[in-house]
Image 1 (spheres, helix red, strand yellow):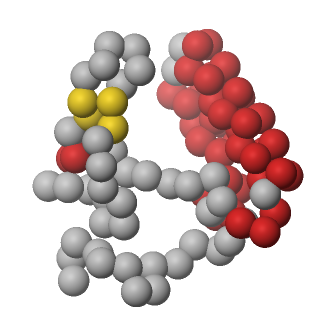
Image 2 (cartoon, rainbow, N blue to C red):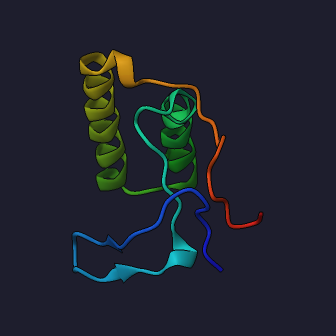
Image 3 (cartoon, rainbow, N blue to C red):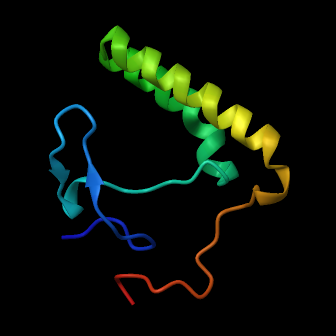
Length: 90
């Protein structure tokens, strides 16, 4: 079952160039303020679950990149919505 209703495409793992099946990913955007606001909680949960240091470092770098992108693009930030989207379950 495809998990993401709002987006489609091909997601490829950078480490080995394998394609991630549709039933293993969901997409969230840096402009989505709700998603951005939960990134520190995601990091905390990874630490709590025992994720390795490489994962924590990757999250920290992602937060830094998203923070900079948001500073550079304030007019593109938004509260998430699904108005007029073609969702899977409709």
